[in-house]
Image (tube, rainbow, N blue to C red; front, side, top):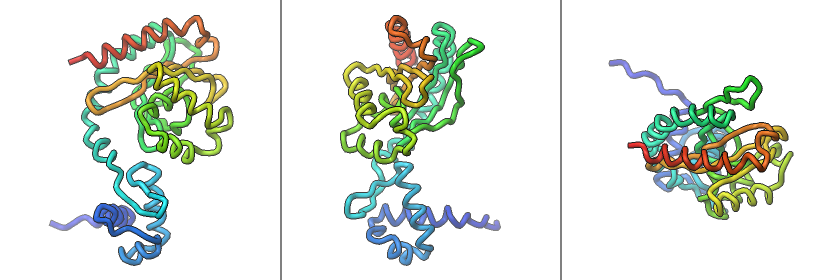
Length: 245
C-alpha cells in the first residue's frame, strides 16, 4: 500500500516534540535545528507555537520540557465530552431562567476556549460563538480557570496576554478577580473585555475536566440586586451537572 506523503511542517514538529521528550532539544535554536535537519526559522516557530499552546515549558536557561499538564489535558478529552453532554440541557434551562447567554469555557494553554453556549432568548442580548478563544487575563471565566494556578503561572498568564488585554483593566485587576474566585468560588467581572459586557462565573468539574460556567449580560443585567439570584442558579447548575450519573 502506497504511503501518504507527510506534511513537512507537521513532520518537523513531530521531530521537535520527540527531541524535547528525549531531552536533546536544549540550547540555541540554530543548534537544535541543525541537529534535527530543519531550518532555524521553522524550528523557532515550532518552539514558539508549542510554548504558546502550553505544550512545552521553557526555563530561564532555555531548557525545554514537555508540559506535564499535556498528558492530563489529552487524557481528559473524554471527560470534557461528558461535561458538555451533561451541561447542554442545564444550560438551555439556565438561559431561559436568567434571560442571559450562558457559556462553558475550559483552559487551553494561556487562553479560555468556549466549548458550549446557550443563547439568551431575548431579541437584544450579548452573544458569541462556540470555539471562540480569549486570553485568560480577560473576564470572570478566565479568573475561575486561573484560580487553581500557582502565582508563577499567573505571572505567565499576564506576560502572554496581548497588549489589548490591558485596555480596560490592569494586571492587578486580573489578580484581584483570581483572588475573588479563590475565596468565594464565584467571580464577577465588569467590562474587562468590553465596557458593555458584564459577567459572573463559577467553576464546574466532571472527572478531570475543569471548566467555568458564565452568565453574560449588559451592565443593567448585572446590577447588585440581581447577583444573589444568579449565584443561586449557578450553584444549582453546578450541582446538577456534577451530580448526573
